[in-house]
Amino acid sequence: MDRGRVEPGGVEPGGVESAGPRTVADVTEADWARLHDAAITMAARAYAPYSGYPVGAAACADTGRTVLGCNVENAAYGVTLCAECSLVSQLIGTGGGRLLALVCVNGVGDLILPCGRCRQLLWEHGGPDLLVATPGGRRSIAALLPDAFGPGDLAAVAAPGGRP
Image (cartoon, rainbow, N blue to C red):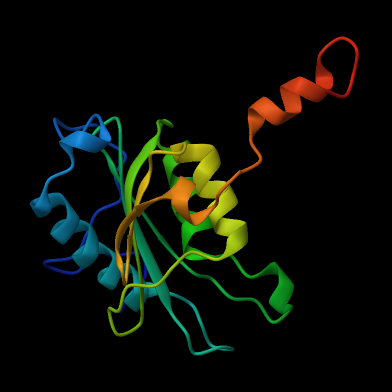
């Protein structure tokens, strides 16, 4: 498959706002199914020659856009780009917004959980209410990353008087 071309029935990157979800409560079962299908398509586009473990991700943003990502490995393993990281890059590069609902799958379409690094990134761009499809059901990112460190923690240290 040509990674630069969308196949019939494939998915387009979400650079255009739509009348889609604006809050977590607006995400429908049809949205979840569409995100799962899009994540499978993205996993098929992943570049995973070293691990052989492709990952695809798809999310709804509060602007109505769908943003997508896939993992991109590198011979220097530590600089591999996770699917969720590429998804957040697309979110920012196509106008920003907040993530509402996220699906991550492996190469056979099974739901998988974001790693700890990605959970931190998702918290930053979705907040505690971001819903993540997991093998055990949909859970908030707050449940997957309890007591998360975020921008408010930095503001507390930068405040007059220094550390809390």
